[in-house]
Length: 156
Image (tube, rainbow, N blue to C red; front, side, top):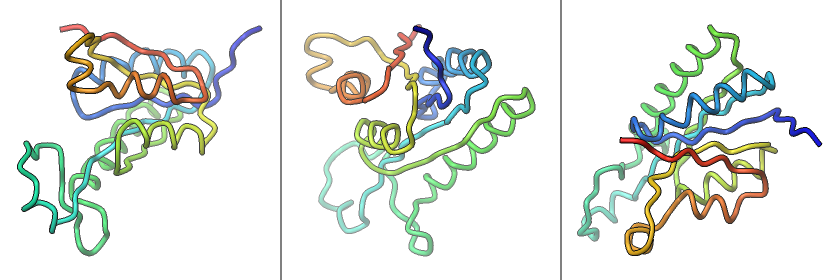
């Protein structure tokens, strides 16, 4: 039985590490003439909650009142649109998607709702205590997704 991929979702987070999954997803999209979904999750928090949080707030952004979406989400979408445009010049159909929420749940939910055939994502390859402390988005997606997941181990 041969796998046919029509929708391939690559998860990005704006980092060079996560971008290491893109060449793999791109290659598969070319091979199968599949749509490549560039997917990124931005974590947002309500302004009233900012005072309550005594955490490192890097990567957490306040919603913009006019749109309900944060400046970071809009900037993320713009960046993904640029990447999609570059891929389209090479004949790859790419769809940019920026969502807010929990990374693993957003990835799983979108993939299921949109009929994604394959999720491609990078992983830090943590184990033991580090995985327990930090959690693992890749592990959660691997266990919760209803489609195959290709994990690309990050290199330094």
